[in-house]
Amino acid sequence: MFHKAKQREPEATATSVATDTSRAPSPRQEMAAVTQPGASVIGTHTRVQGDIEADEDLTVEGHVKGTITCKQHTVTLGTSGQIIGDVYAHTLHVSGEVEGNLVASHRATIHMGANVRGTLVTPCLMLEDGSTFHGAIDMDPDSDTLKNAFSGIADRGQTLASPDCDDSDADAPDATPAP
Image (tube, rainbow, N blue to C red; front, side, top):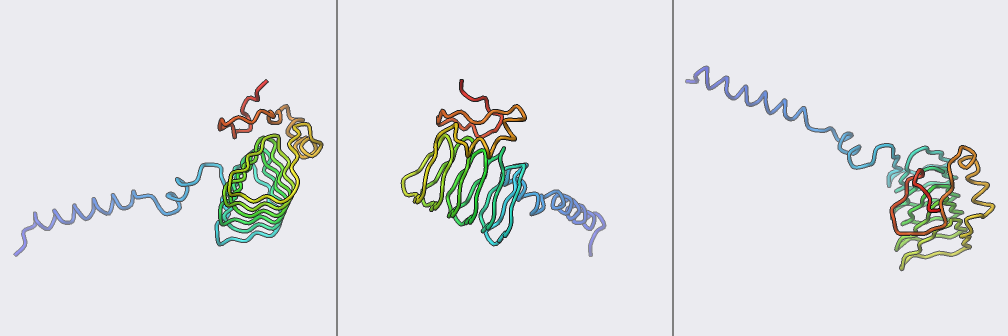
């Protein structure tokens, strides 16, 4: 009824399909491809109570109650994210809700829909239409708060951000400051 050649052909096809399937990226590999290398993500269904120190970019989509210290990298608060506490970062992007002090050595951007209550200290601030801010703003690049918060970085020979607030995407901490 069946010939041996026909039996072998489907097996070979099945083997090649299995081999191709085994080469497909796992869900973990797909997730890694979506996020940038060297970046941490706190997901929408995650709650963290305590301080966070990161030596890489950090995205918060969940809830954090505590201090976030990410002095040489970017902290991004997504639209569903909430931070109750202070944040120290090179660059801040806020789209969610914050109750606390935000200190950025380079730039802070408060995006449309964000709700911030507290003090903002940064040499460059961008408040988009549709964002809500209640508190104090200090944009002095020679601010004692900036100097004290980022003194370890300056001691290692790295410079704090320039007060020049241009539209270039100079989020990298090693970006050359304007003279």
